[in-house]
Length: 262
Image 1 (tube, rainbow, N blue to C red):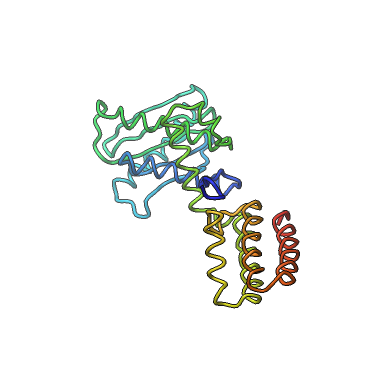
Image 2 (cartoon, rainbow, N blue to C red):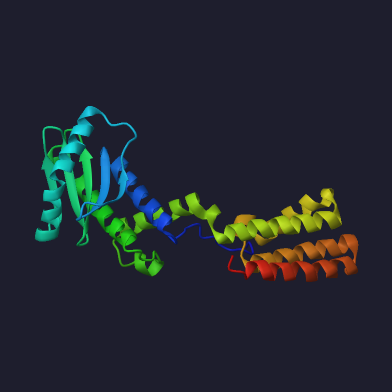
């Protein structure tokens, strides 16, 4: 079994930018998967928190969007004063689906396609799921296994997918990734100067294979094991004096970098 064990490639939102990305991603997923044209997340005061709108709108989509804007004040009053949970409104220009998100916000989905009300059950079910997901994100709640167990399977699965998407999009911006990149560059430079360019790549490749992961996902425990493997090989090539000195210097460096807040 690899030293690293199972790597969890998920990521919770840690900044306002991450939260905004999750909101926009969820709106886009719901819009595209249900064949809708426009998706918006608004407050009952009319503020737009997030949206998913194609770069180019056709005249019918513009007309429907303007129709929504004209009725926005009335919609906000219904949501804030009458606790409206969900509404489906059909116009000549298309269909508007509105779903409440908590007490002070709501989702709006627009489509110019002709949709029969009797065939909207699947869309409405998905919109209701998205409302729960968006509320969870908007309230900055954690996405832990314990929290996921409190939701039904569809909502829990969607939240889990979003943590994977965020990991893929933003992991390289995290402090942990930057530290690992710095450590790898340091060790590569020091080892290359001692062992030479030929053995360098072989030693690093074998060490990473032994710990069972790559530079990006290393933890302090992984780096500790990694250095031990490299020092063992360096000892064979250059002797105890060189290896012992490198061990002391490299571990002092690791401790400083990996324990810092920067």
